[in-house]
Length: 397
Ligand SMILES: C[S@@+](CC[C@H](N)C(=O)[O-])C[C@H]1O[C@@H](n2cnc3c(N)ncnc32)[C@H](O)[C@@H]1O
Image (cartoon, rainbow, N blue to C red; front, side, top):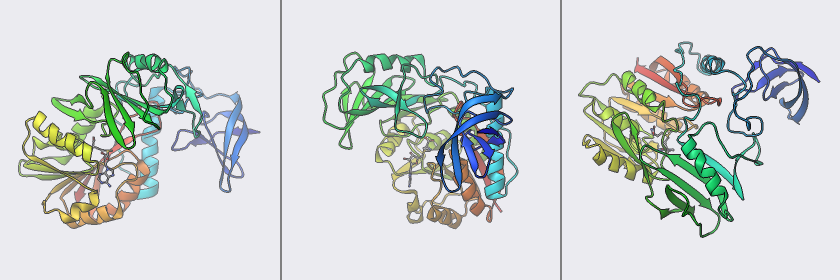
């Protein structure tokens, strides 16, 4: 069936308006394509292109040979210039539609569109691969263009190992060393002699060091951060300093300010801004990340920051009197109880870092009753995928 593509959806898929809205991967606005419906739901269809009748002028040949069979990237069939235009418009549309906000700034581009990731997760079925889009079928790959040559070099070595019992392999890269994590179903013995990296096995909810250290140390600006296997760390090493500089700029710190860093991970943002304020208090649910955060405090010789393990909802129980708050939640955004507590604390400035614009818009729509959303800045942390980070500055009304 022949259809014309109207626009792109939030996941970079083409949209055709038929009797039902139809999502078509790898189809661009203006293109006329022959499709087959692969999924039919009550409110929408999903289609697959069988033949391109008229191609868009902005279509390019993807640089990665696995692009059409690997679920890792979404936008390699357009240039990076087109990608950032799409991402900026996506944030504009979402903010307008779900929060009634129109003041979205120009997107902050990433200078490195390939080889930027410091972490990759491979699925394992005898060999390493990545899930196909919306599927649990694995595409075996021997090279990923979003990671460095050094990280790619481990793939061949790991594929030669007996991976029976291993379901996932995570490779993390840092300034000082790399770390490879084997996630296993059984208490298997792994021969890791050929891997020149820290090697850790995860089984039965525990990490066991098989070689080297059970951590890596990375740098952001002039600060160093210890990262344990389960701790979160921003995946784009080339753009993370820009992201944290935006947080710092928008906090407009004075040396009397007291800053609450919610969802603080290994203390990354808190430590980064602590040098410009009176003190910082960080809250994070992952105990290992808080151990890292306390280590990082000493590593960087910083003494005006304090951390506690807990769900961010515990802010109602702490006596810390913050006048500025940073939140950097996972994709689910802020729990309603956390929003209520933030409103209770009533800080003069709130900087919201988000990796999901939909939940961000939902939360801003509530916060805007008490706060003016002064800035909404899209930051490209994930080139060649549809994901976009956003930094927002909110000022008490
Ligand atoms: C997007 S990461 C941000 C980490 C840190 N700000 C950074 O930039 O490295 C979100 C963090 O929130 C933590 N987290 C998830 N749910 C949480 C909760 N309910 N309460 C507190 N922390 C939580 C995760 O463990 C993770 O470290």
